[in-house]
Amino acid sequence: MRHAVVMAGGSGTRLWPLSRAARPKQLLDVIQDPSDGTGGAHSLLAEAFTRLEAVLPAERIWVCTAARYGAQVQAALPRLRPDRLVLEPVARDTANAVGLAAALVAEADPEAELAVVSADHVIRPVERFAAALTTAFDALAARPRALVTLGIRPTAPATGFGYVRRGAPTEVPGVAEAAAFKEKPDSATAESYLASGEYLWNSGMFVWRARTVLDALADHLPATAQGLDRVVAAPAGPERDAVLVEVFPTLPKTSVDYAVLEPAATEPGRVLVADLDVDWLDVGSWPALAQTLATADGNAVGGLAVTLDSAGNIVFSDDPEHLVALVGVRDSVVVATADVTMVCPVSDAERVKQLLAAVEERHGARFS
Image (cartoon, rainbow, N blue to C red; front, side, top):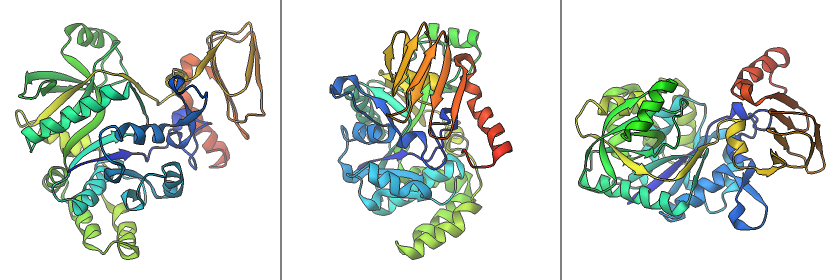
């Protein structure tokens, strides 16, 4: 059967001070949907789960997150079955997170086909996402050993994303063989990628058989495969939890791209790319989040704010009783929380992670 896992373990440090170690961005109710007419907001995680429900029943949707977020995830997703919650004791990069999820899914359904999606994307309209994900599953039915990545049709020469070049078409319309993966390019290269029409943004979302991933780990990352085997061999419940806490921190820390995709890409026709023609936003920074916020007088605004002769700003307050007021301010990020006020030029928004490191160096984890 078809399953999906939402990867929701990230810390979201570039959205500090709103996103914190104890409550990261995917759990914050910051995403506004103008189509619902209520003016309310919901979390990225809730949106990801609901998006998958357009393709799969809730009982076949899993969520992988850090153990410390488990209770918050369960509270945020009332339709998530408790036995579909995969908890990482510590962060060991994506190869181990995806491997752990695949091992537990394969235990529940040895023939499982598994979509791996992220909790920090805004993807609309949902209908086109559902159609593309279904197409990716169809490609897997035609080529059972394939690894299918979802490629976003680029709308700009972005330098912050990896790219995948489409190769020969497959028997499934909308799916091609992946000819090459490219790291984040410079501006000129990104312009050439966009002009060629051959390249898609690499979304970091995949469809494959759970067993295929586990076999790939056994071939290329045997320490991880052996560790996961130990975890799944233990009876579900406290005994398995204890083995997981013992084993997981010892697994080699590496990405799923390095452990699974790169070796597979050396086999012609093994890696496929499905065309995902949607409005896609990777909410990884304040300028990205701003695209989901309401606009007022030329500013992106979340929460209570008043501006005078100010434009191009991103203004956010997480306290409905706390007003942020600006006069004569241009092109700045202004974020107010209960214990931190952060101000920076929009052009320096990518340095927020660096700023957080400086805060931690001076104040420890107090404001993390």
